Length: 210
Ligand SMILES: Cc1cc2nc3c(=O)[nH]c(=O)nc-3n(C[C@H](O)[C@H](O)[C@H](O)COP(=O)(O)O)c2cc1C
Image (cartoon, rainbow, N blue to C red; front, side, top):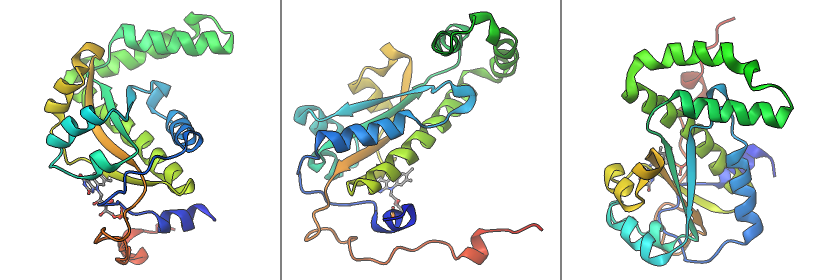
């Protein structure tokens, strides 16, 4: 099946059946997530992969009681840096240079320019910028899940500050941004499963400038 066919197959499942997804499918989805591009290659986010039933129950409590949170196979929590710092940026760039066999100083000029741009914009702007990067990885995970015929529900319907407390994200310098449940649809009980997929018509969606 083509990517387009898989994207037509997928939908934001409202009811999942509790079945576990095979490890290799999970690994594939996670790897696609990890391979996502990000601004300056910083990957300013982490992905928590949660299958612990008690923890899922707790998270459901701060996620509008959405049943997919407990009926999924795995819950991915996307959490982005709460800000950019010299130390964080250096750590990523140094690792990249090590992997490429280049001296750390290769990135010095770029790093200085980047921090010169980010610093004055403040921590809130920085956290938002980092959160935006996590949305790109999130989309990769959704597409990869569809390719694996694994259902996935993207979710912003939760209380981020509460989830941050549950997962003690301040210890990591992170803020939760998104949830993605992975599992299998409960087709007999999901009101959305047979609904037509609706998107903005092409002639309204695209603006062609020749
Ligand atoms: C960022 C984001 C947040 C969303 N939050 C929720 C959510 O909390 N609960 C839910 O059931 N669906 C949620 N959705 C699903 C959307 O409603 C759904 O993707 C949209 O209506 C398009 O339908 P489709 O995904 O079934 O094609 C979210 C989707 C995105 C991309």
